[in-house]
Length: 535
Image (cartoon, rainbow, N blue to C red; front, side):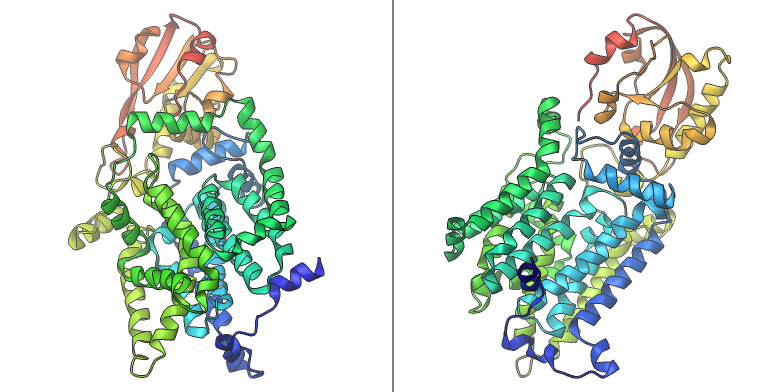
């Protein structure tokens, strides 16, 4: 075990790294090393997210994850179990405030900056190369957005970068006993989001396409794979027990056309916008490093992994451009090493401050599009003035704000309106009254805000709420959110409008009439299996 840990910590005798290893113990020297600068950048990213976390409101997905945290299980319809556990721990330790439940996402973002700099250092990068990789993660719009709110996406880049770092150490030290560490990180990542399969597939392809294929002849890589499988096994068994709902969900999404279709050129264009156009040369330099640099070619397994996962996601029916984002830190790290070498040539050193300034400038311009540092009114003016309207992700109609921001408005207002309707009912009717929501965001809003308003927990047919069932409700008294009257009249003899919700900044599909339904034509218990909504 000590040998394995030493393998992770030791430096290879790479000439490029020697400058950072000079035995200068002065305070200034220690505070201006590559790792120190990367740490400052990571702290700055953490501060940005802690500042922005208090603005706007809960994202719809966050409300759902909070609901899942009340129902801990080994799996959910649309995700593995780790995110619910993380949210449960956050809520127990810090409460339900925006800053509380977003803390882990912000810390993951800071950790990703640290790993990007570490990857650059392991690949031979000195101070500039390490700092450049860290800055690229800091300013990437997709990184700012992912680490703003709690979700699986916040932790995926951290896990991929961790796997990449361990693989680099395996190649540098030839210590294949590190593969179980790779398997451990990959297994935890798999309990967070299934997207790690893309990266793992790319790594396997990269190993087979290089001289490192001989690693498959040793037991350690197989032990790493076994460890990944054992960590994933509880979720796999849950999926088997529930007939693989995630695959059914993907098929439904593909069938109903929820995602905006993209050509390959549009797909690549959105990737460029997500990382920032000024970061594209850095990524291309990273690929060059893996495939053409005399020293970097020993790590070209990561280059192949990047290209394979890009092709796999781009040509997948349900692939989205941001699915590629977790690979950026390792590409930024490699690109930092390559550009550091090129910019260190005589006559080109002026490019170092110029390029970093370009990254920071474009990052500052794009930041309001990724994190809510502006009020909604100022954001609308800003985006319209610069013609920086984010491309739509899904086919739903948009209001004045893009979906990412619009999904942070209106939830508490909905709970307040439902509470008004619920409390207007006779006291003897309220205990029999179900609150049915058509989406997990609506149901999550009732579950979170309704506690202080005297509301019971919501029921819903959407995603994992469906598996939690209608509980003891029969359907004799139901407050219904987000369903059209024509549909409700198929199931109830009495359907009456009882209220209306619609925040000016929320998504248009969250503007609807709330109905109060009675006299069911079929009991809610009998109806439930037929109204599943996995989409």
